[in-house]
Image 1 (cartoon, rainbow, N blue to C red):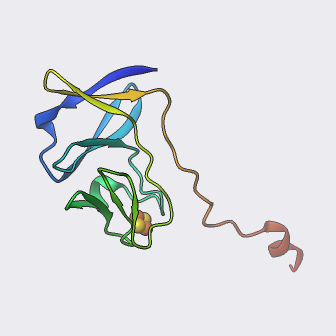
Image 2 (image 1 turned 90 degrees about the vertical axis):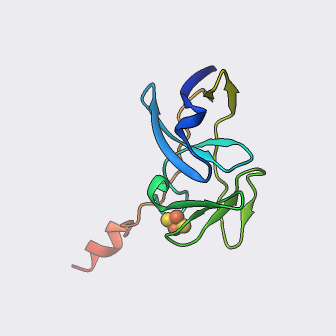
Image 3 (image 1 turned 135 degrees about the horizontal axis):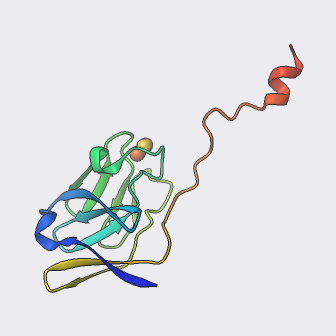
Length: 124
Ligand code: FES
């Protein structure tokens, strides 16, 4: 496991989310005021890019697509949210944000077009 430098602390203003790529791993840095989180770029619900759909207010990251939301200080799920947010460990060093990237964190998504081909074609 290695600590990787992602960006400067000043690159991510309070209550914003920014996308970075470190050694081919794409991740978002979220500044929620009380600290930073490093998270995968896609919403765990339906793969919305959180750097576009995500807003941060009162320590909570909300995906504006269907309003799933997580407390960024505790990583608790809020409201109707059904999946936890994955995150990389972060630390601050000399004004930089470092993330502990062992392997890329990804969510498993069900294929939306997952029609059973057998059922579909057997009637033809
Ligand atoms: S895609 Fe983010 S809440 Fe649905």
